[in-house]
Length: 125
Image (cartoon, rainbow, N blue to C red; front, top):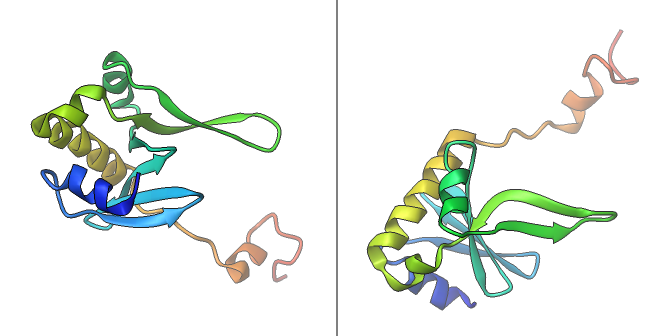
Protein backbone atom coordinates (compact mmCIF):
# COMPACT_ATOMS: atom_id res chain seq x y z
CA UNK A 1 0.00 0.00 0.00
CA UNK A 2 1.52 3.35 -0.94
CA UNK A 3 1.61 6.59 1.05
CA UNK A 4 -1.23 8.22 -0.93
CA UNK A 5 -3.58 5.27 -0.32
CA UNK A 6 -2.77 5.25 3.41
CA UNK A 7 -3.40 9.00 3.70
CA UNK A 8 -6.67 8.61 1.78
CA UNK A 9 -7.79 5.70 3.98
CA UNK A 10 -7.19 7.66 7.20
CA UNK A 11 -8.50 11.03 5.93
CA UNK A 12 -11.83 10.64 7.81
CA UNK A 13 -9.83 10.18 11.02
CA UNK A 14 -6.97 12.67 10.79
CA UNK A 15 -4.14 13.92 8.65
CA UNK A 16 -1.55 11.23 9.31
CA UNK A 17 2.19 11.30 8.79
CA UNK A 18 3.47 8.29 6.88
CA UNK A 19 7.13 7.33 7.14
CA UNK A 20 8.95 4.46 5.43
CA UNK A 21 10.17 1.74 7.76
CA UNK A 22 11.40 -1.82 7.24
CA UNK A 23 9.84 -2.22 3.80
CA UNK A 24 6.52 -0.84 5.01
CA UNK A 25 5.30 2.35 6.65
CA UNK A 26 4.86 3.78 10.13
CA UNK A 27 1.78 5.93 10.70
CA UNK A 28 1.65 8.87 13.11
CA UNK A 29 -1.24 11.02 14.34
CA UNK A 30 -0.56 13.98 16.61
CA UNK A 31 3.06 12.82 16.80
CA UNK A 32 2.06 9.39 18.15
CA UNK A 33 3.11 6.19 16.39
CA UNK A 34 -0.20 4.34 16.17
CA UNK A 35 -0.10 2.02 13.16
CA UNK A 36 2.08 -0.01 10.82
CA UNK A 37 1.55 -0.84 7.16
CA UNK A 38 3.26 -4.06 6.16
CA UNK A 39 2.61 -6.24 3.15
CA UNK A 40 -0.31 -4.06 2.10
CA UNK A 41 -2.09 -4.50 5.42
CA UNK A 42 -2.67 -1.99 8.23
CA UNK A 43 -1.98 -2.96 11.85
CA UNK A 44 -3.16 -0.72 14.71
CA UNK A 45 -1.56 -0.25 18.14
CA UNK A 46 -3.30 -2.16 20.92
CA UNK A 47 -2.69 -2.68 24.61
CA UNK A 48 -4.21 -4.59 27.52
CA UNK A 49 -7.28 -2.35 27.44
CA UNK A 50 -7.98 -2.73 23.71
CA UNK A 51 -6.46 -6.00 22.43
CA UNK A 52 -9.57 -8.04 23.27
CA UNK A 53 -11.69 -5.73 21.06
CA UNK A 54 -9.39 -6.39 18.13
CA UNK A 55 -9.46 -10.13 18.75
CA UNK A 56 -13.27 -10.17 19.00
CA UNK A 57 -13.46 -8.31 15.68
CA UNK A 58 -11.44 -11.06 13.99
CA UNK A 59 -8.17 -9.12 13.78
CA UNK A 60 -4.79 -10.82 13.81
CA UNK A 61 -1.68 -9.69 15.68
CA UNK A 62 1.33 -8.47 13.71
CA UNK A 63 4.01 -11.17 13.72
CA UNK A 64 7.43 -10.94 12.13
CA UNK A 65 10.28 -13.41 11.95
CA UNK A 66 12.99 -12.62 14.48
CA UNK A 67 16.48 -14.07 14.40
CA UNK A 68 15.45 -17.40 15.94
CA UNK A 69 11.66 -17.24 16.39
CA UNK A 70 8.51 -15.39 15.37
CA UNK A 71 7.95 -12.14 17.31
CA UNK A 72 4.42 -10.90 18.07
CA UNK A 73 4.02 -7.20 18.82
CA UNK A 74 1.10 -5.16 20.14
CA UNK A 75 -0.33 -4.22 16.74
CA UNK A 76 -3.46 -5.86 15.34
CA UNK A 77 -4.84 -5.93 11.82
CA UNK A 78 -7.41 -3.30 10.93
CA UNK A 79 -10.83 -5.00 11.11
CA UNK A 80 -12.34 -5.57 7.66
CA UNK A 81 -15.41 -3.45 8.39
CA UNK A 82 -13.12 -0.43 8.94
CA UNK A 83 -11.95 -0.64 5.33
CA UNK A 84 -15.55 -0.27 4.16
CA UNK A 85 -16.97 2.21 6.67
CA UNK A 86 -15.33 5.55 7.54
CA UNK A 87 -17.05 5.68 10.95
CA UNK A 88 -15.61 2.27 11.81
CA UNK A 89 -12.16 3.37 10.66
CA UNK A 90 -12.35 6.40 12.95
CA UNK A 91 -13.47 4.19 15.83
CA UNK A 92 -10.59 1.71 15.44
CA UNK A 93 -7.98 4.38 14.76
CA UNK A 94 -9.10 6.16 17.94
CA UNK A 95 -8.56 2.95 19.93
CA UNK A 96 -5.03 2.77 18.47
CA UNK A 97 -4.12 6.38 19.23
CA UNK A 98 -5.50 5.98 22.76
CA UNK A 99 -3.27 2.90 23.24
CA UNK A 100 -0.26 4.82 21.90
CA UNK A 101 -1.04 7.68 24.28
CA UNK A 102 -1.31 5.29 27.26
CA UNK A 103 2.05 3.73 26.30
CA UNK A 104 3.68 7.14 26.60
CA UNK A 105 6.90 8.21 24.94
CA UNK A 106 9.74 5.75 24.65
CA UNK A 107 12.72 6.91 26.68
CA UNK A 108 16.12 6.59 25.15
CA UNK A 109 19.09 6.09 27.41
CA UNK A 110 22.22 7.81 26.22
CA UNK A 111 25.52 5.97 26.11
CA UNK A 112 26.86 8.12 28.96
CA UNK A 113 23.85 7.35 31.16
CA UNK A 114 24.14 3.65 30.37
CA UNK A 115 27.80 3.64 31.37
CA UNK A 116 26.92 5.22 34.72
CA UNK A 117 24.09 2.77 35.42
CA UNK A 118 24.45 0.88 38.73
CA UNK A 119 25.27 -2.48 37.09
CA UNK A 120 27.56 -1.04 34.45
CA UNK A 121 31.23 -1.99 34.60
CA UNK A 122 32.12 1.55 33.52
CA UNK A 123 30.27 3.44 36.27
CA UNK A 124 32.06 6.17 38.17
CA UNK A 125 33.42 5.15 41.57
